[in-house]
Image (cartoon, rainbow, N blue to C red):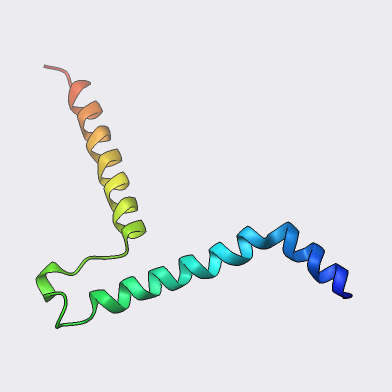
Length: 75
């Protein structure tokens, strides 16, 4: 790949090449901080925000499903 090819590749993909490693490092840092006993008590530790979001979405869907089933039950 020539110098201009590298430059064109960077211009096309600079956001991806910058953001993906940044997100990976932020998640890694979150996990490291959560596992430091001096900073976070064991009972206060949390999962990654993305995992918590998916759990909340899943529990909301289950709640909605249960409500719909309850409403459609005969009296």
